[in-house]
Structures are given as structure tokens and as C-alpha cells.
Image (cartoon, rainbow, N blue to C red; front, top):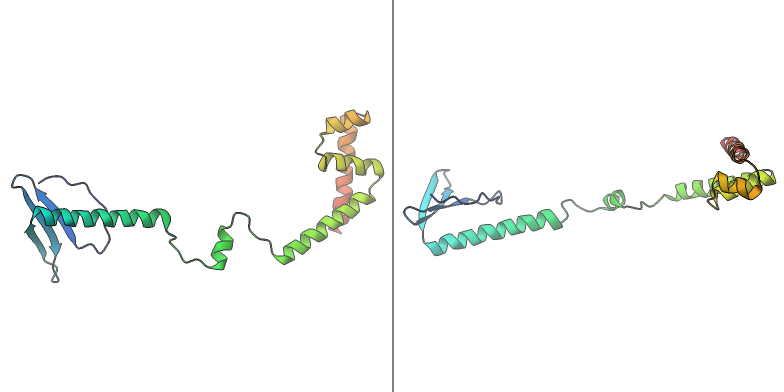
Length: 158
């Protein structure tokens, strides 16, 4: 018997193809309605037709696996899969309120502390750059920014 490559098939594919090389015989094997195994000798043309059907089945199985959605799509599925998930209106309001509070508290800080925080967070300057611009040491810049953040944090938590 010639060795055929093992192929995956549709679960409802009822037949198996067999080629006996020594006898140059083509066969189709299947179970009948009683569950008895039947083997029927067929022509090469019919064998190749069945083989072609099997290859088409494999193509469709692969197409399904690679490209077709496997589950039903509902709005909650789409939102769960989204890369940039939409925020709820409630979250938007909370974020906007928090941002406004932070801005108000930054503006309530002493001028030097306020400017240092703005340079660090909004102008993306390092402690060293701010210290060089103001002619002070890096430690005083770090302290001013950390103290300012603590003040803002305490006021917002209350």
C-alpha cells in the first residue's frame, strides 16, 4: 500500500482513500449505515476526484482557521477587543474634574515651586536642566518638586 500523507478532514467526511501500489488498485473505504466498514475498488479518475474533494476540504478548513471570525460579534465583544477602549462618560467627567483640581492646586503653589513643576512635567526638563537654568543645585529642585506634589496630593485627597 502506498503511503499517503495524513490529512485533517471535516468531521463529517465519511471516506478514506487507499492506493495499493503493488496491485495498482484504488479504493475508497467508508462505514455504511450499519457501521460496517466497506471497501470499494474505484477507477483512478474517481480516486483523483475524491482526492481533489479532500484537498478542497483542507483548503476551506485552513481558510476558516486563518481568516474567519470564530465567535459571534456583539457590541461588548468589540469593546473588549478594542485597542483603545472607549472610556465611559462617568470616567471622562471624573478625569476632567481631577485635571481641573490639579491645575487649580498647581496655581495655588508658591511661584518658584509652580514654575519648577511646570518645567519638569510640562516642558519635560530634567532636574539637572532646571538647576542649571536657575543656578541652584539639583537637590533643591528635587525637594521643591516633591514637596509641591505632596501638597497637591494632600489637597486633592481631602
